[in-house]
Image (cartoon, rainbow, N blue to C red; front, side, top):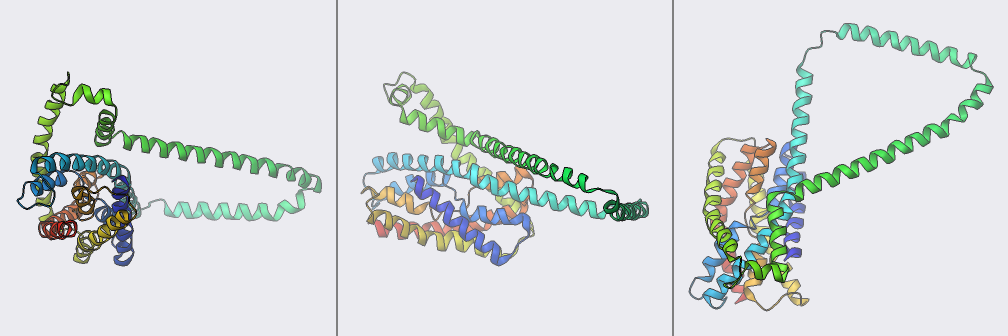
Length: 347
């Protein structure tokens, strides 16, 4: 599943980048388009869809209770992996778009400010130019050959200092990138995923928290109670974000169509091919529910956290709401159709 989730981001990012190159939107929208094409809602939607399918009569996934329990495990794992990719890869996409947008705004503001001292500056530049020309004419006749030989010894020192500056800047950039990566990894969703992996992977910690006979099972019950209330709350937040999409944004209809085609036409077909290839290579278990979750990860609408990031960086908020509105409206039909196709393939 980690490889499968990574492939959803990889293929979606490639298709989104292709759409950006073909459609040529505004610079601050490029990251948003790539993010909506690559980052799917791998969390709360699966927690809703999978138990609903398990409870249906004639489901190809076996007993209802076992299907629901195992399906929630798969969905939770998908949510944890999706949070890691979204708060690193998608976060950087939206952040870079915000930096471009703010840089363009700053450049426009500077260009609009009238320069009262323009005449004085022009005179100063002319005087400086005349002085430089005078120095260039006088310098060859006044500098001796001995001074030339002495100046030749200075060149390696200058180059060495430049190399030191380059090394310092390289390590400074590396430390900056590491610091940004640590900040992204310390985001609450990523921390929650890391803690969840730790509790599930370490047997003695798992026995303390999980199970009817666990001494600290009250912690699990409390977290489960909060988690059951989180899903409807997130759905309400999604509805609140979608209402902003009714406003007119600077987004062309062809961009919306391109994102819908990438997410609901091209990616699901790629998902079928990826799962079939992994099955032929012997990488997948025989559980059809697991294969269904892998396929449906390619057919999900964009992640809701993209809207949170646009509000965080104050860039393309209206455009993000428009994209979320139309993609989630189409998802009502798309998820039904692709779920039927996936179950028909697995049955």
